[in-house]
Image (cartoon, rainbow, N blue to C red; front, top):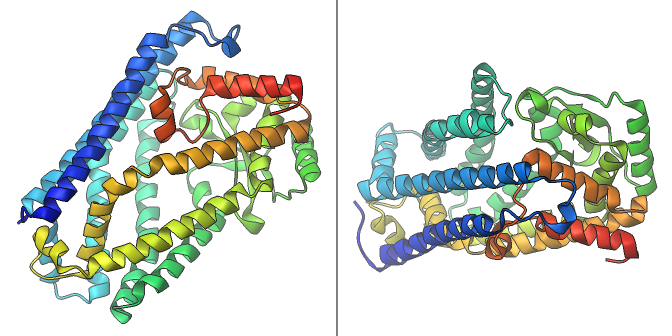
Length: 422
């Protein structure tokens, strides 16, 4: 059982601080929207009417409350399992099987993954078939939802096995220096996923075909060629069979790099708008944002693996959370549990860097296509179609937003287009 010592008290305070902060930010965001949600931002006048603005407000409020409840439930379940000694009980049951440490660790995390999938099902069902369906987004059938769930679980099991089996083998083989080898393994695994996802994993869920609109395809190819970017293909994906939300993105690494357009985007946006959205994505590649983010991720993971290794060597960590003796896989879990609340408070740093990259990519769009007005129009249309929040609270933006707020961003794009400057 839990030992109520200074370590657990410190963890509990940090855990509560993170939960309270999340809740406070959500409440502040909702209150800010209620106060200002009746005002159409200047940049959206003529695009958003009062009825649409009202639906935007209602959708944001309802989905925000739901996600806050989901987060609260996750916190409550974790705390309940900790206090009840659920993790030591599971470890004891697995140890009684007499398995090799590599298989014990893999099974331990496999069981936890399975439990998380089951616990998430009610939230996924409600979010998909109630909230998203009520606001006209969800088009997925129950049969397809079940198929997706089964496929996701199968893919996740394979990927977890590919990651955890060699990971625990390294821990077993190199008890003192495993963390450095594990960090290299993790970095290589990430690179593999970037390359593999568009070729193997994504096609399991959606059908990708070359863009049928030849004029649009030629325009995109010319745009990429002008930027000196080579993509292996330009594809449209049947995203509309699950949702009416729309998007476009670059994916892949090396020869698997490709441009992907949602069929919902192709159905509602002009060629100029689609080209401008892709010019923005090209900007991310040309400005090496993907590479910089990958480097930052590897640097953070390096520090994370080092810290986890130190925590796993700390007997008090196991004693505090009810383990009679140190177990590598239990130490890995406990290190993640105690580090997660602290990592939460670092979220604004990554968000701020991401917002800067978005502004830089917007600026690149001006140089590539000669105007940012089509991108501004595309964002206005996307905001309307996706019922985006046009009045987020500044603190919520600072903490969570990876993109600048839409009203601010559209105004900046229109000003940039008019002056030729950022």
